[in-house]
Length: 19
Image (tube, rainbow, N blue to C red; front, side):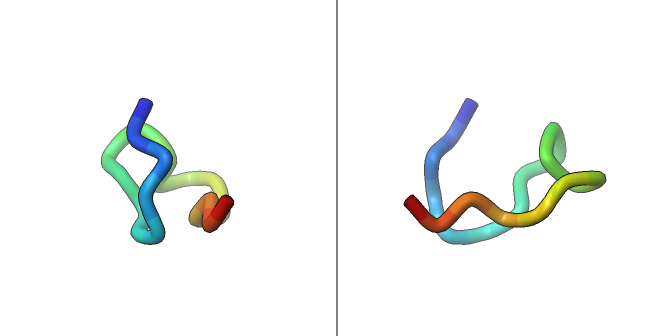
Protein backbone atom coordinates (compact mmCIF):
# COMPACT_ATOMS: atom_id res chain seq x y z
CA UNK A 1 0.00 0.00 0.00
CA UNK A 2 1.34 3.40 -0.98
CA UNK A 3 0.70 6.15 1.56
CA UNK A 4 0.89 8.94 -0.97
CA UNK A 5 -1.41 11.87 -1.67
CA UNK A 6 -3.04 10.37 -4.74
CA UNK A 7 -5.53 7.57 -5.19
CA UNK A 8 -3.81 4.29 -5.99
CA UNK A 9 -5.27 1.46 -8.04
CA UNK A 10 -5.97 -0.41 -4.81
CA UNK A 11 -7.61 2.55 -3.11
CA UNK A 12 -9.53 3.66 -6.18
CA UNK A 13 -12.79 2.86 -4.41
CA UNK A 14 -11.73 4.57 -1.21
CA UNK A 15 -10.75 8.15 -0.50
CA UNK A 16 -7.13 9.22 -1.06
CA UNK A 17 -5.09 8.86 2.11
CA UNK A 18 -3.19 12.09 2.70
CA UNK A 19 -1.55 11.15 5.97
